[in-house]
Image (cartoon, rainbow, N blue to C red):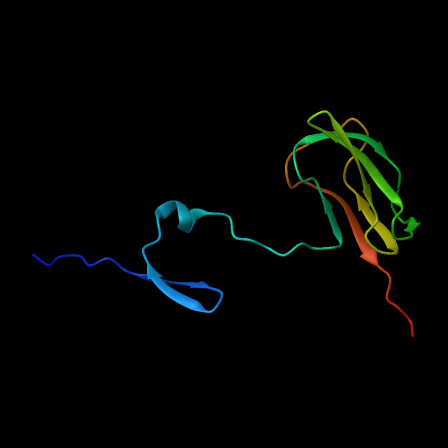
Length: 112
């Protein structure tokens, strides 16, 4: 009977390469994705208290988008860049889950 040998995976930290065995849990984890600046997402479950913008509205950088309550703390999310509100997917009183898309934005192209 043939003995099954473990399959080692390459794991890179900075520039060093290591050969290791990954657990099943590691293989099933959610992969990291870079932040999409055009999407305003909830960072923890909470409740929408106020929505300050509407679809089609032009919003300058730093302007309020919505007020959000989570864990008895109120947070005001601001516009990260000057642009246009494409979609508002929540309204006041809505309960949101972690990482839920709340507002979709469109950045203005800079004209030089």
